[in-house]
Every structure is written in structure tokens, then in C-alpha cells.
Image 1 (cartoon, rainbow, N blue to C red):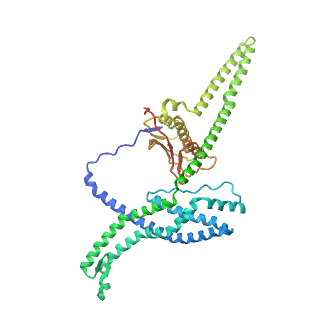
Image 2 (image 1 turned 90 degrees about the vertical axis):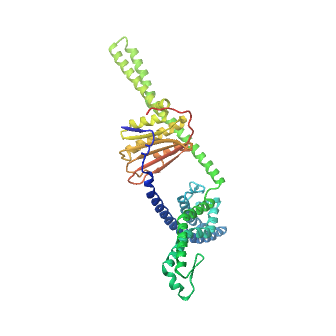
Image 3 (image 1 turned 120 degrees about the horizontal axis):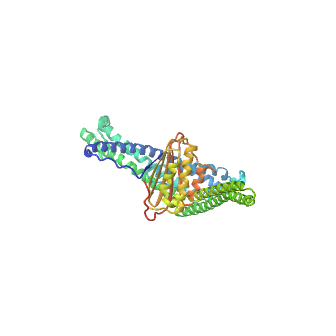
Length: 454
């Protein structure tokens, strides 16, 4: 059974809007406080990493210099692994602040020998990558920038706490010798000054709550500036991606042609040959044995029907007629109806997609539904298709056992290569125990609006 939805259900109207406002404010306050506390912890880790940056910078620079006499090649790959691990941690911290940073490194050469020659080749690959030198520059600057910005949220929180502690009465023993404690341009030597210090501490505390995310966002842009890919690196990566996808598209096309040839040879072609032989036998038996000729004609008719059915199946495997007749939305709904699993299909496609894109998504969804049935032991599948921001977004979710991985030769790898031919991507989120979420994205444009059945 397939349940079909055309969009999200609207939220029910509420007549108690003003009465619900205070709980939302309190929730926002708790969220900001929790966010500031998390940012303070992350900032402390960044500051600690800044101290480690000094050690990594000095050690890596030392062995890079030793590469001039050959000794540094022994430790350079291990140090590079450590440096890139630290850089990746900071990229993750930047992404947490809403600034995603891609890895700019060149792909490692294939088939590196496991001997001294391969080791030297790996070192040359590391030293020839501009991102390696940008990592070193970041390590050097991060020892100051990371320490300053990372420790800033903790410093604000500490300073706010110090003012509140002073205002609670700690100023009295401090001011016993006649000299009060200086806090935020206030000499705390009386209860009046203590109250002023408490107000200043609350201002600092509010600054900590509101400024901590912005401080880490500023650090995230610093990470993006040095650890993100340059325009030249993006262009090189784009060229490599197009070369790989072109090769993948050619491989897919060649495999499809071999499949068609094999299906024709083993299926329809063999039946047509058999049909010809049967008709020849009919011609010989027509005057001598009409009953045998009639039986052979019946067999010939059955063979022709079977050959026609196989040819239709072959055409359906190339470009299903339902795609041409009814479009992608209804074609996917037909897949859901044909599946033994309950499939809930949501399709929001106000126009027609290019035929190759429709075919790629159709076969990808078909493969994912098959995987959910055969491998995931799923009981239910959700399919969501919608076009937004110049791309087709597809989401296939099942409640199976999870643990799906993209390995060489697997169906998921085939889907990834199929989508990559259109500059698309396949993202997998499948923790053990489920659920499994497959996200597909293909850049494409919609043509004239198309009305499909609901």
C-alpha cells in the first residue's frame, strides 16, 4: 500500500499566541545560555589546541628542513597526518559555528609502493601540495589567534563571576587594609561600590552570553581563510571531479550497452531464432500433419508473445514508459505501489525535469527500495522528492537495521556513480540499528509546469 502526500500539513491555528510568548522567551534564554556554555568549552579546547599548534609547527618545520638532507622524509608523513587531524578538528569546530570548511588537500597518488621509493613519493606528494604550507602557516598564526579567541569566552565568564563574588562580600577582607579591589573601573571598597560592581558583572555576563557565539564565528572565518580551499584549489578539484564523473559516465554507458546486448542475446534474440525454426517446422508439417503444424503454430505464437514481453522489459530498463507518459512523481509513486513494503511518497515537482535526470533518480529510488526490502529488513519507507534552489532533492528513509555502507562494487556505489555523472551527490546516514537516510541531490532546472495525478 502506498500513501501519497503532496506537501507538509499546515500547522493548526492557535488563538492563544500572546499567552504562549513568555515560555518561548524563557526557552530562548536557556538555549542561549546553553549555547554560550558549549561555546566556552569549545573555546577552551581551541585554546588548548593553540598550545599544541606551537609544538606541531616547530616539529614539522624542523623535519621539513631536514628533508633537504633526506632525514626528514622518515617522519614527515606521520607528522602530516597529525597536522591534518588537528586541522580537521578545527574545521569541524568552524562548521559548528555555521562556517563549513572543505578539505583542500590533493588526492593521494594511487598504487604507492610499500618501500623506500613509495615513501619518498608520498613525501613529495605532501610537499607539493599548497595546502600543506597553508597548514603550517595556520599552525604558526593559530598559536596566537586560537589562544586569544579561544580563551575569550572563558575569560568573560571568569570576569563576570569575579565581579559577582566580590559583590557578595569578598571585597570586605580585600579592602580591610584600606585599599579596595579594582573591578571594571570601579574601586570596590563599600557596599555601594559592590552593588555597582555587581551590575557591571551582570553586563559582562550578558556580554558572555551574546558574544561567545560571535567570537567563535570570528575564529571560524579565520579557519576558513587559511584551512579552506583557495579558488585555484577549487578549480583543480572541479576538474578532477569532472574527469572522474566523465570516466564513470562512460563506464556506466558501456556497462549498460553490455547489459542490453546480453539481454537481447539471451532473451529476445534466442526466442526469435526459435520462432524462425518453429515456423520452418510448420512449413514442413503443413501438408503432412496438420495437427502437428497447428501445435507448432501455437508454440510459435507463445514464443512471439514472450519475445515481445522481454523486449518491453528491456525498453523499460532503458527508459521506463511511465517516465515519458506521466513524469517522475507518478513513476516513483508507481514504484511505491509495486513494492511489497508500505511506501509513503511525497513529491513536490511543479515542473518537468530533464529526461536523463528523471531516469537517474527513478533507477536510484528503485535500487534503494530494493535494498530496504532485501538487506535492511525495513517495515516502512519514506520517499521525498522536491525541487529547490536549482536542484532536485531526494530523501529515502527506511526504519531498517541500518549499517549501510558504500563499498566498491555495491549497489550504493553504483547509485553514487550514476548521480555523479550529473554532478550529483549521494549522502548516507545509516547508524547501526537504523534508521537509514539516503539523501540525493542533483543540480537541474525545471521546465514547463506539469500536472500529475495525486
